[in-house]
Length: 292
Ligand SMILES: NC(=O)c1ccc[n+]([C@@H]2O[C@H](COP(=O)([O-])OP(=O)(O)OC[C@H]3O[C@@H](n4cnc5c(N)ncnc54)[C@H](OP(=O)(O)O)[C@@H]3O)[C@@H](O)[C@H]2O)c1
Image (cartoon, rainbow, N blue to C red; front, side, top):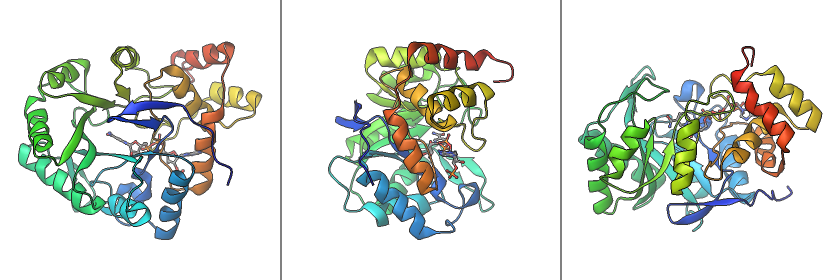
């Protein structure tokens, strides 16, 4: 396989990571619950991502639960020195697969220990506190208790760096009064632009912004305007959606999720797409179009 030249990097957790990373959530079974149909294929995807140069992988112990972390461990442990694994705590799974908030300090501690055990490490590179808010969009409310709990686990040496997920600008400021925040992971993509101002504010501070659902998540983005552009420049709509994010701001780090090797390859090569100003203006307008 040719090596990707998506060499653009950004500092995350004290290391330079490629801006094109990989999100491991799709590796668990349907509904991110239970084992995958083809375990070998998942291992192959993780190994190919890292062989191609990916050094930023996003995960959580509540994917599966436990399954995604166990796959990462089987595929990649002992981990390369330059690999940054970002995980998250703040939820557990019900017996029926429900996503249940688990945001009390004891829950967060248990979540950190679950991640340590299943990833097979003594300390986690980055732990995002996943605030439940309105599930996929944030809601105001103090997160002091959660950040204090994570800062305690950081002092114990179990967590190297702290990030936040599904949070508002006010919650980020509150957290920054307690601990250093190295990344923010919120819902954002070419059609979901509520965080536009936040992306720029974090860029000015050198803090990574990591959009979840960069391709639309469980319902991948469908847009006639995106498809038109893709056809014209000889790329796929998903590649254009990822390239648009890379062009949007230098602090945006991508973690597209896929359970298909062909999609992984397609997504990684989006790092080589260069979009000119006219195309970017056209893509910028998609969020405002009624039909997208
Ligand atoms: N902090 C949070 O609350 C939160 C929430 C959700 C996700 N995340 C993280 O963010 C990562 C990315 O989110 P995500 O995986 O949910 O959504 P996503 O990356 O926006 O999209 C994944 C979906 O797109 C499909 N896909 C991927 N590449 C494709 C391609 N080239 N062509 C066509 N379809 C393609 C995947 O199906 P195939 O498997 O068939 O490729 C899957 O259905 C996750 O892996 C997870 O690590 C975080």
